[in-house]
Length: 145
Ligand SMILES: [Zn+2]
Image (cartoon, rainbow, N blue to C red; front, side, top):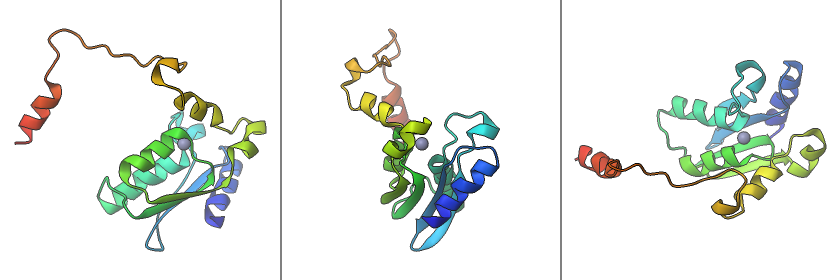
């Protein structure tokens, strides 16, 4: 965790946001990353997500079962969802959303939105299935034999 925080501190000096993440498996560091939004313009360039991408490349697998992430700040819903999707075993964070709130670094509002039923969220999520477009998943299943 100290390394994740050190990465976050160094990222401030580099002009970035104060977030770092270290991904570990069996006591070995697989990936380290910092928030890179400032240099990439990519709004998804969060430290945890970049650490997951780097670890998947390093391990040659999209599955990261048994891996643990140490993040300097509370993971946002996007990163937390990515952790669920790839099998991260646990995540530890040092700074809470409450501590980030005064600095605009909290994602508590996004968590609050996502805790609401889809029809009540501020971002509309609606089904839109054009005529004649059925069968996509069946085609995939069939293509896999
Ligand atoms: Zn995130």
